[in-house]
Image 1 (cartoon, rainbow, N blue to C red):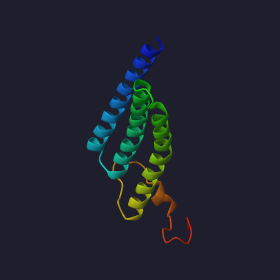
Image 2: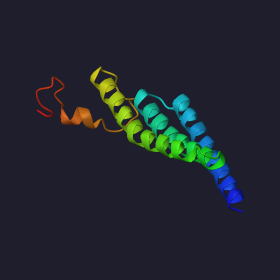
Image 3: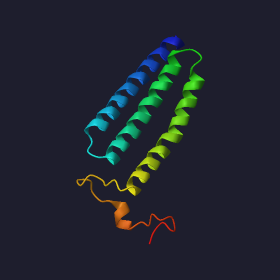
Length: 119
């Protein structure tokens, strides 16, 4: 009985994961600039991969500890790497889409020379 419940739960989690991975891929193709695409790619694919890996861990015996470790690692590293890429892109001069409302970094007049965060 427990195997049947875990099988259904694993199948549901994999289906949710595939759905969010599809949404992340769609967002990467449809959104107008790097920053919006980065957000879609990070948020949707993080949830998608975590759901899929835990679902596989529930379906395949012995893979649950590895799947949970993978999910925890991804939850810790994906947002940090996304932030680093976005910050480096902004510093390199990539401008947000003109339809994106306020550019908070430009409003704060950040000093990117490394001497201080704000003027």
